Amino acid sequence: MECFVSQPNSVVLDIAVNPKGKGQECMDQVCRILGIVEQDYFGLLYKGRGGENLWLNLRNRLDRQLAGPPPYRLQLKVKFFVPPHNLIQQATRQQFYEQVKAEFESQKLVAELEDQMIRMLALIVQAEHGNFDQRTHQMNLYKTMLPDNYEPTPELIHKIVDSHAHLVGLSKESAQYKLLQEAAVLQNYGVEYHEVNYGGETIHVGIGPTGVFLYNASMELIEKLEYVTITKAEHVGKNCVLKVMNDNGTERDIMLRLVTQSVANAMYRCITEMHSFFCCDTVHNEVSTQFSRDLKGTLASLFNEKTTLGRDYVFDIKRTSREAYDHARRLLYQPVPLTGMTGESMISDKDSHDCDTPPLSAEEKCQVLEETLERIEDSFTCCVCRDAEISATLCPCGHLTCIECAKRLTECPLCRKQIETVQRIFLPTIQCKGATCASISLQTATKSPGHKHCHKRKREAYMDMLECPES
Picture 1 (tube, rainbow, N blue to C red):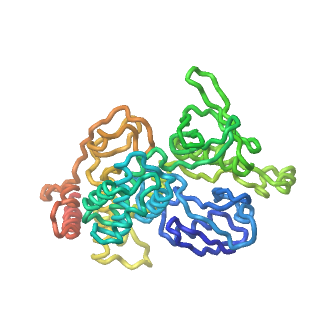
Picture 2: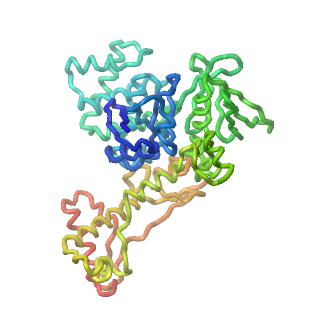
Picture 3: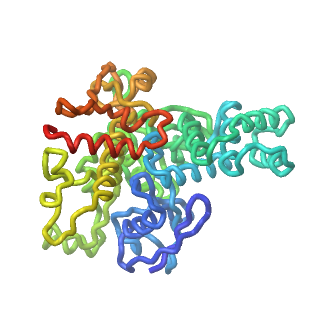
């Protein structure tokens, strides 16, 4: 069975899957082609029978969700917009950038302040066309990329030119990352919109990482419902019902009516998955195990309650934001298996290899040690700025950052828990116990500023440790 999967930059991938395959099989092939390990942030979008956009449930069969004959047309989209500092791979950041750029150009992602719009536009031009150049086509480019609510006046174009000129020398990857940082502070970053009928009026419902937003027809905010105030979400036919806790302790029902039952189910699924991904420590069983059956499966379940025949899962979320980040790090930075406690046994041919495996050469041993040292160095680097060493722990969650980033944070960047206190920590250096061996600092061995032979220095540092008789 053939599927055409289009990326945010309009490049189409031709994917062949089993006729009875599940959506996860298609997603795995797409991520393998693009080199993406952090696939928990992405989803596949398709058109319903009424032309509505629906998320493909990756746990269910493709042919039971997609209408019509193959080839099926799908879109690879970012489903959960996490903060950019949580993205580990450049391939993942590239997909995030392409979608943010597309939403900015289509005005789905709106910069309310003019300065924000100018900075974002300048970063897009820098990432797409490089350094500022006073060429006619580049000057016209600013005008064509301006949102419709901005008049291309000479003063505004001059501000954009000035902002772009200050980005000279910025690499494409850095410009993309800075654009994601600018987009992440916008109110509608990562918000999915649905058009509903509420109280006889047509309104827009935005579902994002922090809660549910109610807008009028002019996209003016009516009410914000944080997830902590929503006690329950239900899906009944074409209606999606939210039970909300008021400030005085009473509950009220907000009934949102949609055009079709499939759209109502999509909205109910979106609210539940957004809440689970961003606000929960783990995906609860009542979410991961919830399913429905068709007629054939219902009849079979009368004789065998545990049968999977005709079973369709309601949600396909597997991990929360924190679990997805940890899972990606484990896949990307798998430690080298160690069999001993001393430095010599880390690379010992007798202890680390089978009898049939040829021993490692000296160069290969050094390569293994270099990779191990790089993983150690990365684990000691702040997850926010990705530059300074960790020097503070956030309480009560216990995650680590550098002290400068910790001072500016109000919630943990990994688990989103509120920070009550920040505790300064002091990490010891890596030292050898031998009396004749000099102490080796992790920072000195890996981050010596201006050192032209860093690999040689790391290699010498490790070999000194291995040669010490008492290490």
